[in-house]
Image 1 (cartoon, helix red, strand yellow):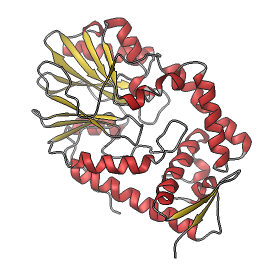
Image 2 (image 1 turned 180 degrees about the vertical axis):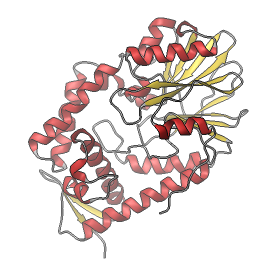
Image 3 (image 1 turned 90 degrees about the vertical axis):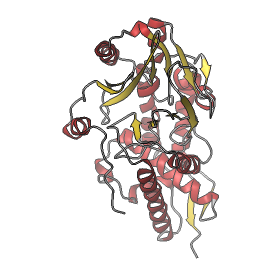
Length: 354
């Protein structure tokens, strides 16, 4: 399908993204700031942290990775707005991935801020980022990859790739659980949490009705689609969850979307329609590849799908995400009677097209 261009809310911010530079710290609205925080060794390059002014300080949405570079960038960005790290009163985390959650614990130590997270992600924090859960999680990831048909040595390498992510997270149990539909007690703000599972089980967006803004985290981005994958900490059918929550978020009447990556944009419903269409095309492609074979593993199927670059050039650690994302599409088809899994070592997938 043709890819519609969404309108950037700030052309300089879009130009920084396309030009490979860091955008400027920006006053988005009175009392609201956008602060780019660098991400190491990652093509996304930065996460956009949003700082909301309060009578006695600021609340931030997301935090960045736990690196000195990220901490210093956030500190400098707050300085442009007239604040310091010590002025942070709350850290609202959209989800537990390291580029959003990693610095939260360090910010709490420096400021006394409370950390808020949805319960579905809060339940995963310790196994994901604390010993001995990290090794157990890697072992479960390897078992899943083997069932997908990934060769043994490759599965070991792919499962271990996630261990390095622990270095970018300051382990921190959240102080508050933010429920779906909850209105946050932040003076001067009419902020409501919207549970949008898929990219993570507890992903949250935040709607500011008075200012007609949506803080979308990774749920809706202007150019790329978030990874929605089956993995040891995912829901059973994360793609179904994602598409359902995407349709719900697309009904919101807002003027502007403030994502965690790339740049701010205007057309929410149009972007949602495109992303849904993208997954429908992907599901059709998966069905077509399955129909041309007499059973295949998820790994073999993934190697035959269309990606943004040839499979052979995709870095090994990214092939894990591609495989788990392919599995999410297979599980969605299986749940709707459009594909059949024969459990084994590995699992084999078959077409049910008539």
